[in-house]
Image 1 (cartoon, rainbow, N blue to C red):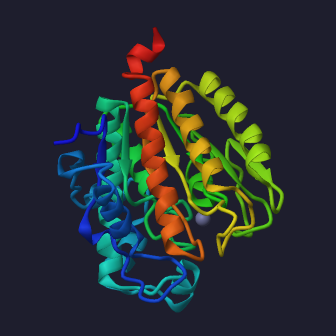
Image 2 (cartoon, rainbow, N blue to C red; image 1 turned 30 degrees about the vertical axis):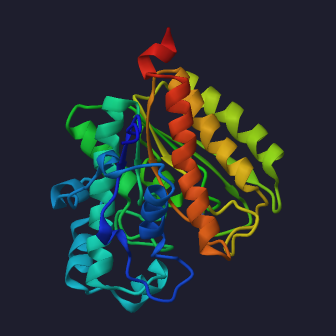
Length: 314
Ligand SMILES: [Zn+2]
């Protein structure tokens, strides 16, 4: 039997958002899970299965009105238009599970230094409405849950999805306990970008070197200055050069280097990292799946290079 991964992966077979033919490949969750097993990168013992987040957890971030509309299927036509995905009970179940999964990954990362939810990163969701394929802000729900439990005081969100983390920025705008960093293509969705703590605006077509030389020093500086108890990584496969909804030009190797660098900087400082997937719309779905799997590989390599978060400090 292969050695277990040095951290847990969180997955549920009902992560599928049930979108049918859609630019969001909602089968990617299952494909990532299957590729990890098929390539021998993980085995059954490496996985944790989440429960749906409780409504109490969801309601720390979202309004009672939005939760009720989701649960009863009473979104207005304009709310469905903003969400940009068809409404279904399966979608609601999947986003409650995704939030539960990000909570579980965060709790697990506090024990092991790292953990990955193979869903989540729904960073366009706002407290009272959804946007851009995102109905429930799983990362915000997890941050509020851990704070309510006294497990953490300060959290940092590093968002490298090609689209600005507008929901995250809006939710935590006046909150001194949460630092938000977004690196994204400036000329892209969403049109309105409320300010993050740090916004790194990339021009169209930016490649690996320019991107990494903007991101890494910013992450280093933010970690040193803010000293969070946990880092939530909203990874995003969509800065990839062949993405249909992105206009940056990163290679697969550049994206993996991005992931590895963020994990290394956190690990060196003894800060736990919980990762979520966020977007990915490559012409070939296999590319999106491989980029997400590479995030797990990068985490695994960093975990082995720095055997424990505390050891990394000494
Ligand atoms: Zn995106």
